[in-house]
Length: 458
Ligand code: NAD
Image (cartoon, rainbow, N blue to C red; front, top):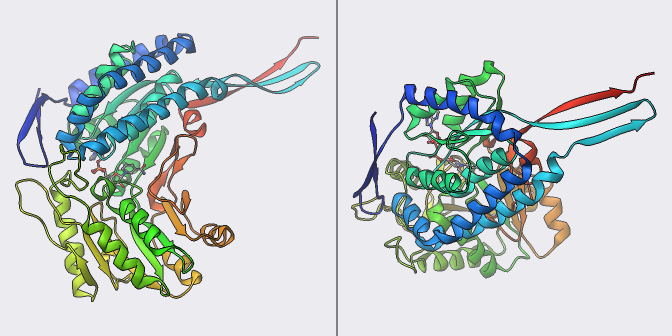
């Protein structure tokens, strides 16, 4: 077996070396999961729910060490690691509470002589190839409803969040999920690619558009259920009747939280010309107040980027924006290493000819563009191939409704941003993906409906 070396992105130090999978071990695990799945599905739902309830207790018990592990391997500031774990608990509770009503047999017609019912079967063995930026959230959005509904899961955490992935596996196994029913696969893209070669009934992917497109091509002719949760270039519009300081404080957080590495980070801001200058001043002041430093410190807000390669993406976007006339208001360069450090960066005077306003940045960088009307804002918000989230800031609910209802995005925010709710479906339009997680639809996604036509004899 090969091994995977894990580095701390805050200082480049090696923190672990773990045994990695190869194509042969992936195959063996897939065969064992296939054999184990029917027994898991045959258990009473109450037993599967009890496993997730014990998993919840394990996360609560180990929260501090789980947060520290996530911070060491991803660079996520420790407060945000704790936030993610605490936020996870409500998602677990939601899935446990809703799985029964969502998967109960439905009688949809019942007349003398004829009864029609829908039964919800598990898909079978599903693969989950996951991202590193919110490894507990994006992992458990798939893993937990998949297990609750009776599936076996082959889970390939990101190579940048492997220790967290192994902790998820440890806690699920401790909670009573059999080792062949929840199976972690360790490694980078090649291990994900090996998983695609196995017989699967569903493949649930969270990651970049480029990898998602490659996966869709690979499995396209195999007729397995495929969900892709991909990137975004999420816009927000600040209207002229908004409070510029309040909107700036909220949006600076939405753009820079988790060092800008959220799928729903605010990535483009349009501000009405009447309040543009005040907004920009307040935004830059807020960003300058963010503390950059050791992600293990309680008061750190900006940590390192998780992946060194993203520094080059940010360098290129900054150079392109400057060359095309954008105004750099703060940041704009790497910070001294070791580690993957980038100064929080704000540009104004940007336009859609710049990569900064078109391609996902996935870092602490933002462009702010002046607009003259709601019409112009809507046109620019829709000038993208992505469609994950979009927002508007205004005290006027009717105006917000009029703007947002014309924007192509899976989640719409009024006076808020960078927010996910377990009760609402999480899905992308356009190149942000296909399928969804969360909400009752995100439980049903792991089931296959079967139709029963029951005609009584005689
Ligand atoms: P990535 O595409 O680089 O990697 C994602 C996963 O795919 C990893 O586990 C990786 O090992 C695996 N992989 C890579 N090549 C593969 C291949 N050829 N076959 C199979 N698997 C392969 O993405 P990332 O850097 O981990 O995540 C960042 C991206 O994820 C951003 O674009 C972000 O917007 C997106 N994201 C989206 C959501 C959402 O809900 N829509 C949530 C979180 C992150």
